[in-house]
Length: 224
Image 1 (cartoon, rainbow, N blue to C red):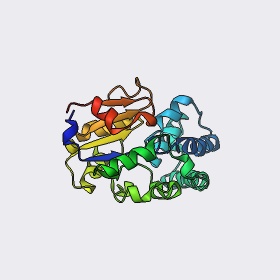
Image 2 (cartoon, rainbow, N blue to C red):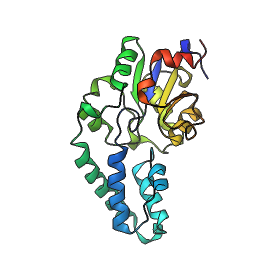
Image 3 (cartoon, rainbow, N blue to C red):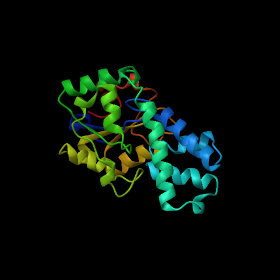
Image 4 (cartoon, helix red, strand yellow):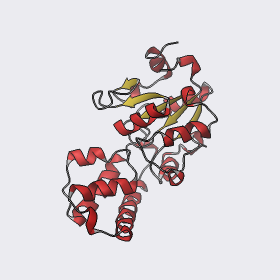
């Protein structure tokens, strides 16, 4: 883990870190699972967190042994239908949907001169940020369409650091999913995991919830 004094920027995930759109994703994916006849479970729901749209669909189809029953075009249509349903839910979002303490933490980061980028697998991240009125905090957003691999591959977090012209070791990545923490670690960045400690056991720094995340509390868990 890097020294706190070496950190120059933060690379954020979106879902489960800045806002909880995971419930919207779950609702929309559940509708797809019901449509294709795949069994829905808590384990499947948790496994979809932080995973790209097409990879999520493949996981749902695999759960029902349905992977070979749909053409690529049909799979794209299912994923598109999921996204349409998801966006209807996103349209109802407001700044009240920002997770506890996140707005204050973003202000603190900005006030102390740290750079910020967003590394979300969601193609809808700009729209979500707009609804939350947080667009100005994230002038640099990794475009998921340019990525060749999804989390837990480090590519997205390496791009997040490059967007703000920093080396990975100068960045802290913030995640709520195990696949995301693995991605941050593989990129050579310091990882913050928010949520269940056992699930996020590989994170360098851990917080039970977003409200606990402050620069002072991060510094306590790092060397000077």
